[in-house]
Structure formats: C-alpha cells, structure tokens
Amino acid sequence: MMSGLIWKLLLASACCSLTEVAAQQLVTIDTSLGRISGTQNSIRGDEYSKFLGIPYGTAERLQKPEPYGNFASNPLIATSYGSPCPQFSNGQIIGSEDCLTLNVFTPKRRRRNGLKSVMIWIHGGGLTTGSSDKYPLDVLAAANDVVAVSLNYRLGAFGFLSSPNDGLPGNYGLWDQQLAIMWVKNNIADYGGDPNSITLVGESVGAIAVTYHMISPTTPPNLFHRGITQSGSAFSLRFQDIRPEPNFQFVSTTFGCNGTRDELACIRAIPMNSLLASTPTLMYNPAIDGDFISPLFGEHLVQFTKDNYLQHGSQGLGNFLNYDILSGWNTMDGLVYVPAVEAINRAITGQDLSQGISEFVFGEVFKASSRGSFSESADLITTLALQFYMNEPTPLISKGRSIDDRRLEAFVNFFGDIGFKIPSITHLQIHSKTSSRRTYAYEFTYNPPGNGLSGSAGPEWLNAAANHRDEVPFVIGAVLAPESICSHTGLARCGRYNRREERFATNLMNHWTRFAKTGRLNNKFKQFRFRGGQSYMNLNINGTRRDTYPRSAAHRFSAGLDEIALRALGI
Image 1: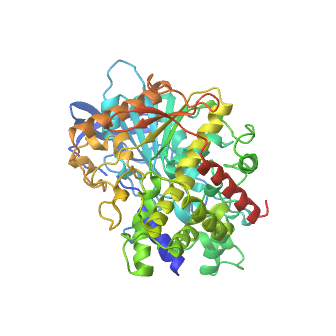
Image 2 (image 1 turned 90 degrees about the vertical axis):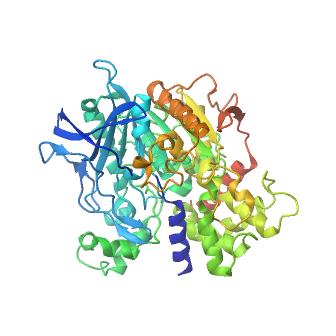
Image 3 (image 1 turned 120 degrees about the horizontal axis):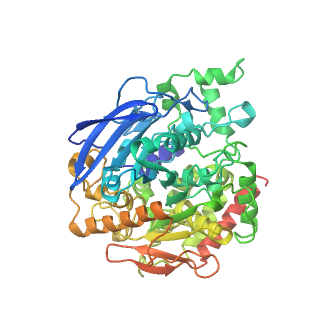
C-alpha cells in the first residue's frame, strides 16, 4: 500500500507541464490528404500558421496503429488540440483512446518554394502522463524559420502493457510515435516542411523514445536525420523491461481474465476508466519485444555494462551511428523528485524536509520507483547508493549539515545520475566512440526564479541548481510567449519572464534550430569526443562556457549497479 502511495506521488512530481489559446484567423490549404483549415497568427511580429489536432492514426486497444488516411471532412477543421491519451491528471481521469493526433506550426514562407527544416517534439511524462497541448511550439516555429510538430501517443497500460509470451509484445506508444514521424515524412511538404531535414527532439522519457527510434531495426533509413535528447536516453538498463510480464499478470488477474478462453480479448474489453483506475501505480518501460526493440540492443547493453562501458562495438545499435546528435542534462535533474519525497516524508514522519530524510525514506522511495532490470535488486542497490553518495563530496553541502540533510542531497544526486545524467553521457560516449557523425553535449545550469522548489519546506540548496525540465520553456520559446498562449501550460511565470531570460531563450532556440537545420553548432561548441576531450557547453543566463566531463566515480559506480541488477536477474 505504501509503495502505491509513493509511486502516485512520484508520478505527480515527475509529469510534464507546459496549452494555448490565441487570436484566430482561419487559413485553409490543400494537401495530399484533403483540405485543412488552421489558424493564421502573429507573435512578436512573426507570422505563422498552426494546424492542431490532425489525426495521423487509428488503433484498436493493445494493437499497432494504422494510418488514418484522408481527412474525414472537407475541409478538416484543425483549430484545437486533439484529446490527450487516457491518463490521470490532478487525480482525475482524462483523455480518450481516440487520441492519435499531431500539431503543425509553420512560419510564413519567406522565399518561394523554400522548404524549412522540421523539428518533431516528443513529450515526457514517464510513459503515463503528458500530451502535446502542454508544449506550445508557436515561438519556436515563428521566430526561427522551422516547421515544428508535436504529437500524442498512447500511455500507461494502453501504450506499454506487455507480455510477449502471451502474444502481447507491447511498445504501442513507440509504434504510435513512429507512425506520426512517417506521417510527417510523407506530408510535411504540404505545410512548408522539408522531409529531408527532420530532427527528433525529446525531453525526459521523450528523449528515451528518441533514442529508441534511432536504434530500432524498424526505423527506415532517412526517416529522420538528427536527434536532440534532453535529460534522458535509452542507454540504461533501468529504462527497458527484460521481464515485463508482472504488469500484464496484475491486470489479467484483477479483471478475472486469466484462465479465460481468450485472455487478450478479455483485457481489450475492460472499460477505459476501469483499466486506468486499477493501474495508477504501475510503472512501465519499453519492452525488449524482438520487433521494435531488438534483443541485440539488450545484449549490447549487457555486454557494454560488463565491459565497463568502454569496449563493446556497434552491435544492436540500428541506425544510431548515422545521426548527428545533441544530448545533455540539467545540473540537478534529481530535484524533480523532491516534492514527492517531501510528501512521502510527511506521510511517514509527519515532518517536512528542513531536517532532511531518514535512511528508511530514502530506501522506500527508491524501491517504489525501481522498474525494469533494477526491480529485483532494489534493496542491495539502495544500501550501496547510500554508502557511495554519503561519502561523495558535493558542492552544495556545507560543513555542519546534519546527516539527514546530507542524505537528502545524496538522494537528489543519485536519482539525477542514474535517471538522467549518466544515461545521457553513456549515449554521448557510445556515439562519439563509434560514429563518424557529429556529437554535441551540453549541461543546462540556469535555475529560473519561481520555477523550481520555492514551495518546498527544505534547505536552501534545493533552489540552488537547475531542476529537471527547467530548460524546456527556454528551448521551445514558451519564455517569449504571451499569456494567451502559455496560460494553461502550468508554466509558473507565464508571460512574466524578464528581458535577460528572453534573450537567453532566444540564444538557446538559435542553437537548437541551427543544429536542426545543419547538424552543426557554432564555434563555441566543441564536439564531444570519446578520445580527445569529452567537451560540453555549460548553458547559463550569465554566459556559456566550455567544460570537460571527467570519467567520474559516479559513472563507474552506476556501471557496477547495472551489473548487480543483471546478476539478480540471472544474466
């Protein structure tokens, strides 16, 4: 029961935030799928059009999606976002299973027949929450001369319930994404986009998804051309299910489907709200299904782990080595879990975080959040993590802090490392070691005032570093968006960013869109090279500077944890 409460709180803290309402003037265009009407808009003097809620696929429950085909009406009215996919939001069930839609933001054409580079945004949310309407891409497209696309995909049990031995391979949410990318490839020229210059961009679990599209054997060559991953990568055993059957067994048993003549038909017939209500604490990972994700990739990670992340070749990497990549992390991504830890600490001890956390709370949170390959060895890993991170010097803890306060910092650093930073760096190391394409890295270090943990009753250092997702409103341009566009996004300071922050956002968008257009960054960015300086750019409002990633003790420690997890699974 406690683990269920803990996971609910973790989901509440780690889901996404960032919708949009604007003055509308209809614009209608002819496309190969039929006529479509969107809205023509202007933002800060830049004109653009947007087409919202375009259906790209249809899907039966727990089956691969099929292309939607031609528009059902003529013209299709595309002036509002489509329904989110089924999920919990603020404790309420929202969404519809008819949710496979995407949105296109296209700037005014500035030259005849000039097609523009395309950026496809894949949202985060732990594979259980999130929707495209939370990420307004208006400014990104209008001010930077790119076509921007966002999309919905199936989540939770609807997108990732899996049991290959029972005829349910899973990964339906990834198949949805791939179908949306194919729709963009085939149709984006109708909206002024260049099908031969497509960049995938993802944050958190969206970044993990981008990695899986790069390595999937089902991804056609040249479907897309570059990848940007923000605080996430699939290069971690923690983000794949080698044994996904327990979730399937739980659902089947809960609804009396096990032992029936057609178990899958029984599960597919469960009412949407009932299925969601029964599974709010289940955690999901992409499964090694032998189709979208090759067993060779799982074997690659296993061998890569046993070889201490240094020796293994390119087996199982699909097209990963054929893309230019930009990958990075935020200073303290692990801070995203602090609100959940605070709530859990109150539930267990009746206290806030001003005095830190106990060893028991540390362990309970990690065990409840363990999934995939880590679930069988959570107790041992918790013990080792406490020993390591309590003795690892950190810049934020001053002398005289209590041991419980140091333990809270250890928790933040541990979760930030294993969940975000180390998978991202591994992603960069593998690519730069084995690919001839460009490899760029960054660390986002700016902590926007009022956008972090100011409401948490804890030590001051909780507000001293960049939290998970802090970069998102800057790189998509929401910092520059008026309140009419960002008022429903959950952005804490919607319409109230200062001039320095606006200039910072403009610079970051310039970096991201330059990479999307050319695969290059300006000369300030030195490429990340496995042999020859693992350089990355420190991105801050006070200026950028070049740093070099050391082969840290934390990276080696994480590799050791992976090997422990494999042994627990008998691998």
